[in-house]
Length: 301
Length: 232
Image (cartoon, rainbow over all chains, first blue to last red; front, side):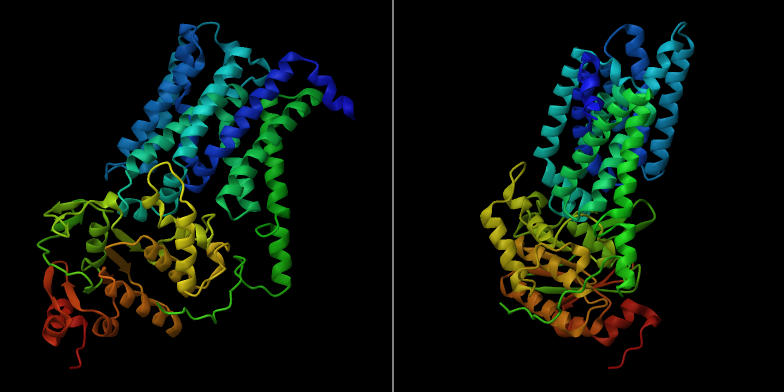
């Protein structure tokens, strides 16, 4: 049993992969909470695809894919922000248009490159086992910046997510805060690109927070549990993929999905099992509604 | 002032003054502009013309003088926050950018919850309260903001007698503290009982004045047209 863990740990590429996935799981888990709470899953998916031409261009230029990816991610974030301000284009359509256009640009750029095919797979599906020491360091630096910005603006992001009307009445620059959040999502996607690739990134950003939300009603706990779920899925995925000889990216995502399904069934308050039991006990409200005693009248002024 | 959405709806020519401690009822038919006016004051939609002045100078929203109590339907009750978290949001502006609310802010939030009869329930999730209690949470948030203007959007809709009395006390308390209260409502009985002034909107600005002299059958007919039977 112990060999299950110690044997892979003997390989430096597994060690690097584990460090990488812990960093990525942490940053995805934190930023993902706001993606989920703001209903930005589609935007996140779009960002994951629109960074593709940036990746291709960086590859052609022989530079780190992070540079190109972030440039296109930032471009998308700004594009979505600006386009969705127009009343004639709905936010959804704006995202859809950019999503398809940028991904198509990547496809066209790739079609001009001979001998690119062999690397295409690792770009689309990631290659966490192939990360270099430099990649890990770059990931760490970006992750620290993203997490720092998220925590500095945590209360502002929370107000905008919960009550945009209040945020505006308080004079918060809601548009600018939204743009910063999109940029954080873009940066998160960029650092996650090498672990699971374009197609599966969304699973790292959306699944752990969705799992955490099932387990708690508090934002702070949700963020902590989301990180735990993301890191656990990542680490478990790498070990399983080593032993089962499966693709690391896909295995990580499936491990995260398994955690989500477990939470969906067994979560204490929101889980299917507990909802079922509560109903049998006579709680007819599906939404775990426990009326608190209405008696206490306020004590006046 | 004037405000509107896109090019389709525009509410213009609104002009009124309310002194400290005024309770202004915004009345009019559906689509008459009550919400538009409220949202323009809140800063949710931009002013198309004119300006809002507070204490003799143009209103600056980032000073946190405006508290907005939303309609129940407009709140995301699934958001992972407790009642105490929501009330504490009323202190965010006072805490400033980046900084977290401190012990004093928490004390004020706890005191506001207690004042509204929700003492010790700050840790519960917002979906675990009844409708009337949920409104009290948002009233507590408005209290801790220590605002100069409070905006209430249809506060009397669907609340029972007990919560109605709580609401009356809070509104009266604001007025006593010199806060201007704007209430958008369909409840004309409450307008007659609670307000010092009325502002009548029917897709256009109809009238503004003290409730005693403006809340009359004639104005109501002009505001609601044939939709309202007035028993004088």
